[in-house]
Length: 115
Image 1 (cartoon, rainbow, N blue to C red):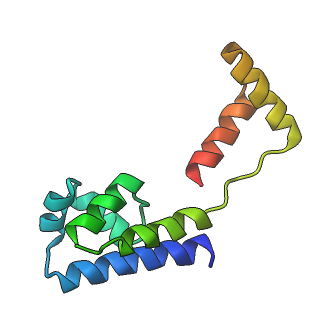
Image 2 (image 1 turned 45 degrees about the horizontal axis):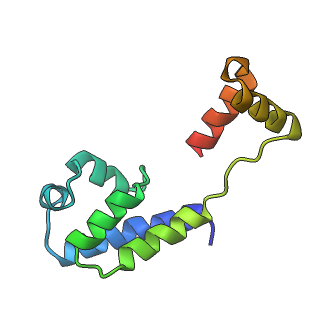
């Protein structure tokens, strides 16, 4: 399963469980200690929750680990951006001496975080 499919499955499972529990987004947000808007974006597949939020949602919806397992599938399916060997050398130099961080290292880290 690819990352988009796995993450869409998590979002659908979250929405289904919330509907089955007859909870509004606002009520679920209060139970999971998250914002209503953030949960809206998660349910629509526009945002990916942290493991802590996924765990809180699982608990709030009494999913007994099912939501957390779906989150784990989505998390594992995401493939990190690979760096070329020159970028790895730049990373090593940047770690050894942070003053040596250059635009290529910053650019690669931005791509990895966006992924």
